[in-house]
View 1 (cartoon, helix red, strand yellow):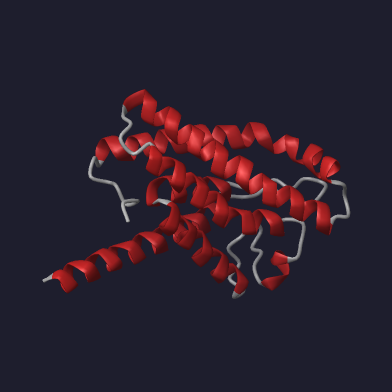
View 2 (cartoon, one colour):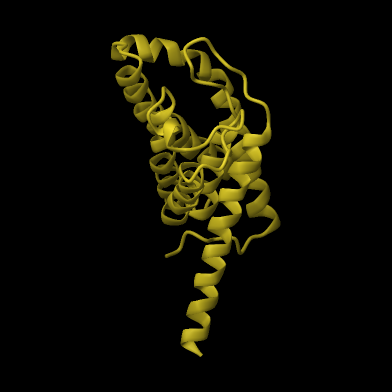
Length: 193
């Protein structure tokens, strides 16, 4: 009986990881907004925030890693139909690698706030999305952009400031979705293990 329950949990975990990887792929279908220095505005960072906040650190990391594996294998899942190994050496490469660690950070912070409800849950999810989805992802993204585009870290940071307002909106949307899921499905605590 124990092994059956363990495999059910494992099957459920794999299903949720695959579901959130697919959600990120769907977000990639929404047209991107290209900026002059090669880093587009997309909704896929919202998928990173949601994966971490709703799946927890380990599963969130795995969902994003699965998505990136599919991209590396050539599936055109990034906005504009991009995919393949080439995207991992372009101006967005730092962001792509940062997504995994951003989801992990979102999950860690949400685990600390698992007992919050109501407005406190919204604020906690917003903070988790802000730290993981912006601070952590941008740290990788700015470093990658600086290296690939031969810019100073200051120049790369200044170039990224245009994304902050949109990403703050994504944080608020993530928090709203997390709050809605937790209210509608109080048993949704996938980050326990």
